[in-house]
Image (cartoon, rainbow, N blue to C red; front, side, top):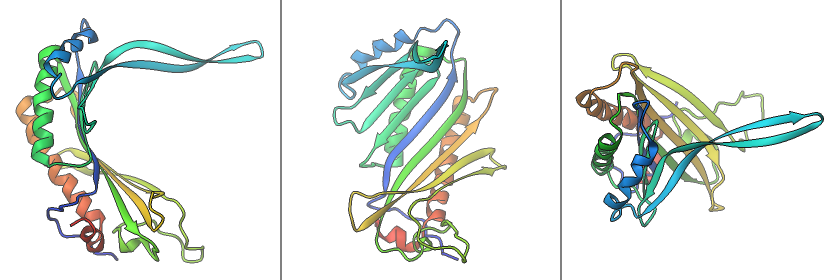
Length: 250
């Protein structure tokens, strides 16, 4: 059985996207156009703004003809992007999302910016409830070929019955774990992707830690939960990779 990596700071962490997400319930009278007033306030750090609209796909059958329909369900909110495209903020009717694309900075920077922008969301939307919060980190593990066994890099690699051919060209696994003490869940996805480098292969390790509460979170509880999410996210990451993998990103 592969030995998991020791937790520590990685100078070249393989994070390609870090996401902080809030799902909300807004007053029935809320108009998403109110978020457009953020354009001036965010113009320095997030000069690019575009509408976010909801669409519903369907089909219309008339006789022997089948017509595909894409119905515009209206404005959901606005998407703001930094000049370099590395920071993205989405202000929507159903919540707020902040994303940091690679190169990753650090947890304090990501959460701090999410908190700053979240306050702007609250000032515009006045949410009745915060019903779901999420920390999601998508990691791209570029590992060298050839690979005799994925256990060289993953502690829970795909397992092939011994009587079958052992060459793996693709795989996708998804499990959901639950910390019952903290009432936190996490989706863990491992997937094999083609690499842009011929001598490498890419393994995606997607960690999505979340908590739902239909009665809603208060602010103090919410920010405390995010720190708990970070701890679980780190334990999942280092628990999913081997020391050999971790050394690739030091």
